[in-house]
View 1 (cartoon, rainbow, N blue to C red):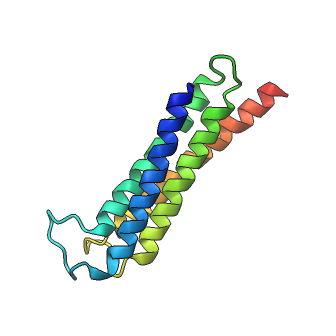
View 2 (view 1 turned 120 degrees about the vertical axis):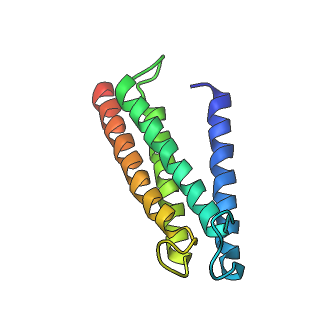
Amino acid sequence: MTFVRVRVRAVFLLCALEFAGCAAAHAAVEPAAPGVLYMSPGRLGAIVAALMALTGVVMGGRALIRGPMGTGNGRRGAISALAAGLSGLALGGLVAATAPAGIGTGNGLGGAIMAMVVGLIGMSLGGLALARARRAAG
């Protein structure tokens, strides 16, 4: 993994965290029942959280399937998967905690719960890949 890819991932994570924080802050001023095509801050926050969690699953799966690549022992990909999965889990939890109504009201609660589950899966895959990298190194 090159230095540029690491920087791009770091910038992506920081932008996603900033965007989700802004979406959660504006949750109090959204209308009571947003329309189908209206993207409320809760929906946008849930989408960002789900994309972060899905990124963690993809990176964890790649780290677990491919194992050590290049000169390293596969540890960097596993740690990236853990970080992305944790970010998706945390952002999903933030959206779920700030959603004023239940599932189906357009506040992003269903997407937030899904992002939390997918983030947990991404963290699990990253943890398995990290354990394999430690076992291979030691």
